[in-house]
Image (cartoon, rainbow, N blue to C red; front, side, top):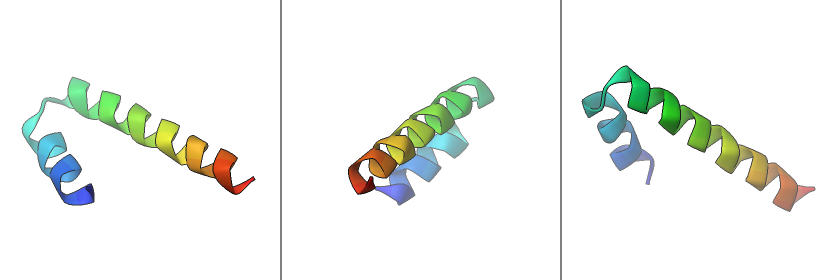
Length: 36
């Protein structure tokens, strides 16, 4: 999953990359919730 995400991040413009970063942070927060 990480490989395609990184490839898409490189291909898409910076605006899209920022959106992907936000999604990644959201996933991290969800993982923290599951752990907690």
